[in-house]
Length: 338
Figure (cartoon, rainbow, N blue to C red):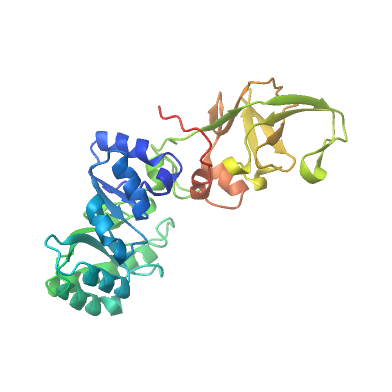
């Protein structure tokens, strides 16, 4: 199991999340870049840390010093690691990424023979694992994922036939883990699902329970007459005498401007629509139907009484994905880990 805690654990707080997971028995983690891995080490994490994305060969000494495992995803980059680590007494462990159809990072199948020759000559690096990234695992149609897995298995066979031990083999991300059992190989890499969010909007939530809620409190309340313009540009005008609550949270904190007139927060257990242009630090909501007082609890993401706002609700309203919603909650928002 490689719990993916990149992007500050998808906005949940990488060090506290990793500490809890390690206490629960996690022995490996995956992050995107070295800086994230260093943060975990400085936070006391002792488990293996895999760098899924950018790794610069000139940083190999840093990787070795902090016990970080880089990914080889490009022939020139892999060649660089071979040169930098030449003569090292202790080989640097790496994972090899195969591009089976994602079209981003990874050694393509037609480049594999060149990669094998390179690995045979690079005595300063040692392959500890081999993986691929599935591009369409969130779709119910299995054929594209099965095709990628077929290519991956062929590449693994080529590695083994050439005397290169592929090490720990993994392919399944959250969507594949939940929808495509054939993708579950020797290891899996849960990301979004780890935080209780389904990877697909039409997927069965099952036993997943969101780990994050986003809350604030009412800063001030105004009672305004019909015809009152609200916020920058006055793009929203009240159609009735209204109770307007100001919230001390804005787009820097993850409440996107696109939420305006499309998203409701939960106030007094009822829906209160966001109105007017969301500002950097302030958001207005129409509390006419539910009432509001300064200090009242407001739920932007999460549950209140019998209602719920999910990351998918916010993502659909903003024409994006829940990844962007949770990763986009700003750093000045206090994280309280329970």
